[in-house]
Length: 266
Image 1: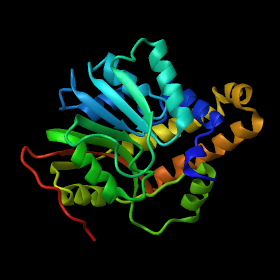
Image 2 (image 1 turned 60 degrees about the vertical axis):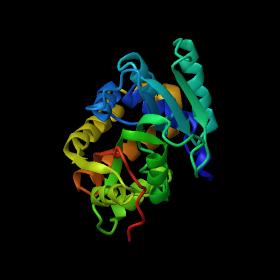
Image 3 (image 1 turned 180 degrees about the vertical axis):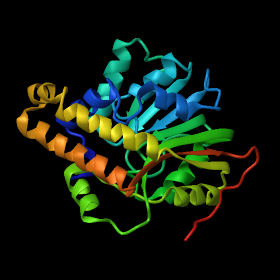
Image 4 (image 1 turned 45 degrees about the vertical axis):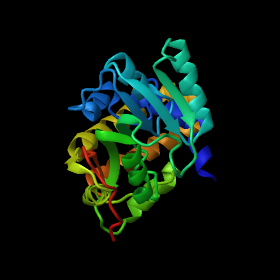
C-alpha cells in the first residue's frame, strides 16, 4: 500500500465520528486554539501541513481570523477540504493543495505560522521537513505542532499489534528528539509540552464511546467488519497510551529575527 491511499473513506468517517466533522486528529477546536496559543494569528498567513479534510484550517479562519494554505499528500482528502471550504464560503481565505514529500512549493519567508497535527508523526525525514519549515517561515515566525511520539523503549507486542491495526505509516521518535532537531535547524524558544495524560484519558473515553453508544452508528455507516476493526484498534490505542509507550505532546518554536539554518544532528 502506498502512503497516498492509507486514509480510506471509512477511516475518515470513523475519525470524524470520534473527533468531529472535518477533524482527523484529536482535540477539535480546542486543540487548534492550543496550537495557535501565543501566535496572534489574526490576519496572519498560516501553512497547515497534513491538513487532511480541512477542519482545523477552517477553524483557524473562522475563529482565529487567519488566512490558511493547507497541504496534504492525499488528493482525495484535499478535494474534500476544498469542497468543504467552498460550501462554507471560505475559498478567499482558505485553500488546499496536494503536495508530495520533499521541498515545499513555496517561496522563502512566505508564512507567519506553520502548523501540523500529525504530519511530523508520519514523516520519516524529519530533518528535511524542519529545514523546509524554517525556510518558508518569515523571521520571528512560529512553528507549532501536536504529534504522537514514543518513549524510546523497544516496542512491545501490544504496540506492534496496534501499528498493524492502524495500517498507517508512522515514524515515531521521542519528544526530546523533536526539540533537539528543531534547535539544530536554527529555531529558538523551543518547547516540548507533554500532553499524554490528557490524551490517555481521551483514548479510553473514545474507546468506551465507540464500543458503546456509538457502536450501532459505526455499524450502520461503516459495516460490521470495519466497525469491529476500529473498536479493536481503539482498545489497543488506549492500552498503549496507558502503558506510556505511545505519548502525545506539542512542540513550539520560533524562527529568529536574523537566522541561518542549522545542520544535522546525530
